[in-house]
Length: 432
Picture 1 (cartoon, rainbow, N blue to C red):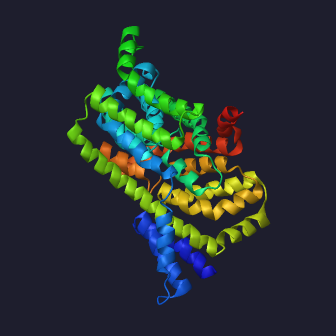
Picture 2: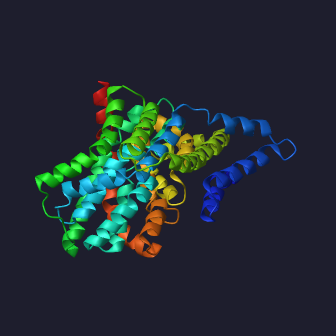
Picture 3: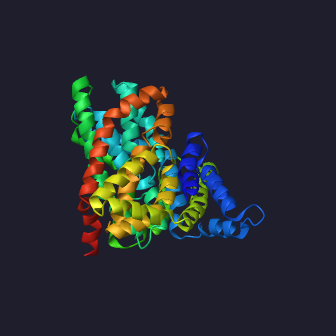
């Protein structure tokens, strides 16, 4: 058992640290465990094939490529520019103006793409260049962009929450997505407070208070873009469409908006956008399929049962268990892709959370928030690397600049951990 535990956990983390991609590291561990169990002569190719192929047969997973497509259409079609300009007009007069506009734009864009990296890549170049031109230093501009991008997968729609719902038992995707709305707003408020304090200390510039005509003009130009999150969240809250159907609605709306209304995406450019979407979707679904095999082998090895026994002998308090899991999630998030971590950890800890009475919807939000903070931590922090490339600054400077923003994000994490009603009251209110 000790050998298998070493292979499942230590070897997997070692492969990640050596630079193996998530599906290849997970797949290598699965092949090694199967070989240890059955030998080379009796290798169960049928079990491997069945588990990998069947795990992709999920209606919920259809939401992922459509959310990705919607985000790419909006980035290419100039929607992000309109959103950022309007956000700057609304909130840019507060000290640190463009920094607050950066955070607010991420909140709005979060209601469209569901991906932190899409936010960092799509809005990043626009936000950083605007802040540099206004007099903000590049590391601070990049740090605000990277930190605010973590809001993307918390506010609905959210690709990581969709992935979690595929693995978790008896968890409604719509309920899970709606539970992220209030925590996402809290994250934005916390980041804005940090931006304000740093901006006052460093005497960063602010915009003049907007005239009514300027506010109206920017609102008018951004109105149809701003309707996207309202349509998605309103549709899910009212029950007009499910979370998966919301992904299709967002993609269709973004298509008509960018191609026919704004006319900033030509029909001939759609092929390239579809190819990029297909490539990223295949990458995520590949991880989903391979991770399903990992979860199956983990359960067969009775490692989740051992975890329940070990933790239950120490404590049965849901709060203490959640604090332990927070530490685990934060550490794992430093080394592992968020979607892969969700797919691997959820089956492993599921018996534990059910035995101590933790709400699975609450756990999903806590897990995703931890892993989003992981996107800002080396060595695998995708948002750090993405924004570092966009801003053209060394990774070391990027890490130092982002350090102050860990404080509001961790504070928000602890608040949601200790007060689950913050996340759950909105879906409960709508259900009631």
